[in-house]
Image (tube, rainbow, N blue to C red):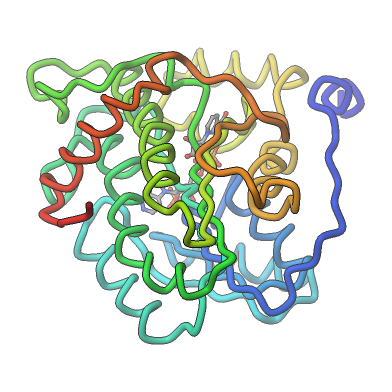
Amino acid sequence: MHSLRNFICGQWSSSVRLDGKTVIITGANTGIGKETARDLAKRGARIIMACRDLEKAEMARREILEDSGNQNVVVSKLDLSDTKSVREFADFINREERQVNILINNAGIMMCPYSKTADGFEMQFGVNHLGHFLLTYLLLDLIKKSAPARIVNVASVAHTWGDIRLDDINSEKSYHPRRAYGQSKLANILWTRSLARRLQGTGVTVYSLHPGVVQSELWRNLSRPIQVAVKVFSPFTKTSVQGAQTSIYCAVEPQLEKESGGYYSDCAPARCSQAARDDDMAQKLWELSCKMLGITWD
Ligand SMILES: NC(=O)c1ccc[n+]([C@@H]2O[C@H](COP(=O)([O-])OP(=O)(O)OC[C@H]3O[C@@H](n4cnc5c(N)ncnc54)[C@H](OP(=O)(O)O)[C@@H]3O)[C@@H](O)[C@H]2O)c1
């Protein structure tokens, strides 16, 4: 089974070191985020695991410390479903850290029952897009000061499942869990493009990616039969280690230094949908996101 996976998913390896660099990874206590943290810890970076569940995060941190031998791995509280928590986390980082060289916006939820964030945003859009949009906005001065720096947004091929519903962004008129997840992942790609344009010439580059279909806890909100089907088809999917490779590639690959705003899959540039290349919609989404969060970001 393992070799079938390796055959399908391919391998990417790089010996790039990150000694002296600081990395923030959201949702690093499990799945793709945890494996990304483990790999980057082995490369010598200071790792800040930004997680909502501190107990689970501490267990993951201990495992990473033991495995990597890197003692410079810390946990910090971040709940992306509450802008107060995002602001507290960013204040803490801006106060305590000298630099942030890599920000990996990885955390995500998929196809949950309808619910709202503390600020009244539809949960998937609120966590997957708005939480990371605000976090990046609040950390951007420090990231710019740390240039060359990178921002990596973990999106998905599921961006093709939905569109940006400007007239019902919080799915209040109708809610389809799959469409709402698709909307949030489409938003990840659109704002990556917008951000890259705004950051031209600053030494900060931005990437979005699809990690593959990965065995992780992401499927927790799906029905039991679908969860069983995901397990049955596991030989054709990626492990979390394999799923982390494109995030790691976007974070460290030297050849990407001159690229920004692109979408990647399997550690290579990939083609996203036409809707994800709609710069007009990207601008509308940017303006709407700022309005919803009450921020000014030109
Ligand atoms: N797995 C796939 O097949 C797949 C495919 C395409 C894209 N992706 C994307 O890959 C990323 C990582 O997903 P995964 O597969 O590793 O899923 P996962 O195992 O469920 O991990 C998701 C992480 O996000 C965290 N998170 C969820 N809500 C949060 C919140 N409000 N505040 C802070 N952290 C929160 C979770 O924390 P808790 O542990 O506390 O819940 C967990 O650490 C996601 O953006 C997902 O959309 C995954």
